[in-house]
Amino acid sequence: MRLSNRNKASVYNFINTLLIMFVIGGIACFFLEEYRFNVLGRESYLFIIIPILLLTLFYLNGRQIFEYDSDGEALNFKNRNIIPFLDRPLHDEFPKYKLIKYEVVHILFVKRLYVTISSKNTGSTMLKYEVSYLTKKEITDLRFSLNKVVKTNNDKKEQRLKND
Image (cartoon, rainbow, N blue to C red; front, side):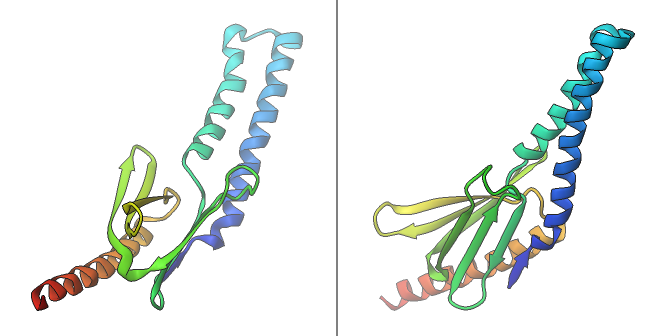
């Protein structure tokens, strides 16, 4: 199964550009209010605070583009930001049999995917992906696919233990 919200990158770029324009416009309105009109008083700081708060929320929500591919014998996860220099993109590929468990965590407006895989060196490794910008249907499809892989792995593990 393949899952990607890469086609929404133009929407995220537009929102990013709009928020940056709000910040610049807010700074301009603040300086006009402070040095020219002086009508609002202390409320003029809201011209700067609100756009910066909105821009910060947009970036704190996590990497915008998430891609998942479970076709074949490997699981492939990609997570990147629309602004390439802002954050390093994540790219992980590993065999399906290494997947132990996964968990999707919702904290306020932030959604994260935690994937635990088996590792020779440490026993298990946890990988973290930001899936805040996926729709409910996309998250449901992702859970369905990962559940299928985990169930298959557990069935094979039980069968091996039963045969031994």
